[in-house]
Image 1 (tube, rainbow, N blue to C red):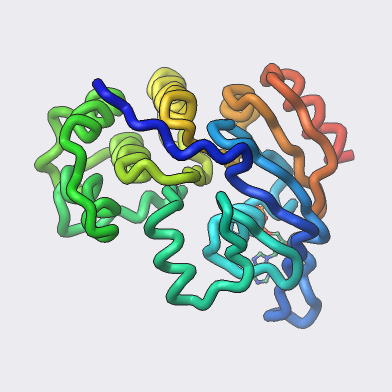
Image 2 (image 1 turned 180 degrees about the horizontal axis):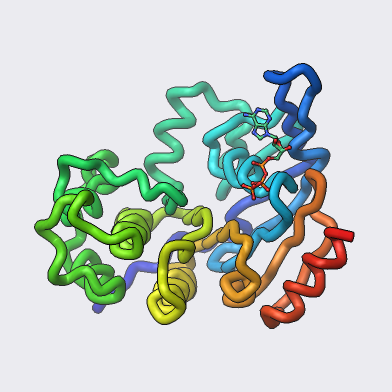
Length: 249
Ligand SMILES: Nc1ncnc2c1ncn2[C@@H]1O[C@H](COP(=O)(O)OP(=O)(O)OP(=O)(O)O)[C@@H](O)[C@H]1O
């Protein structure tokens, strides 16, 4: 299969001193307290941390779903921190793929239509060869005509992953991407994310509680109390666990 390599820019995402404070409750919640990081193009990075450490907030800010209270978020060449809501929506549609915990599949669309949706919304013709490849890799070949309500949680998760990859986004953000899968399917899904990152120069960011999932990444960033407090390169699951326990103390 011919695969087009994404335009090589050395850095896919840069966060510069990102703060995010929620002021909806009686006390302000400082979810991010000055996060700076650089993720190279084609890299697979896992973000780990205890519950409440700021992982989802980091993902939401880096993906342009939420605006930081201060600081800058640069995706590719584009500083997205100052974009209007409409421009941000367009930017996400063209450059960002998501795999959400809750899958967010459209109930009245078939599996095939759900997978093709991002390409359709971006006004692009679906690359049928790439679709066929993704369907094979995610094991969805027999399920293309089903509705989401006719899928198991694990099958729905695989649809969400194929959908995130269909438009070959600059960055794929995955929030607990293997949470509902048995360990064998989970490993296959991680392989798909990793091999895609390599072959397409695509950047993947995985947010997870699972040290085994995190150890599939080249690099693991440990968040605690709204800050990146540790970083591991090519770690084992045991190493990730050790570091997580260390910051929990
Ligand atoms: N919309 C919001 N309004 C108020 N506080 C919020 C909001 N979203 C998150 N927070 C607070 O910000 C902090 C970080 O939350 P976040 O969801 O980013 O953590 P997390 O590491 O993803 O947690 P989990 O692993 O449990 O999903 C928490 O103290 C949380 O209560």
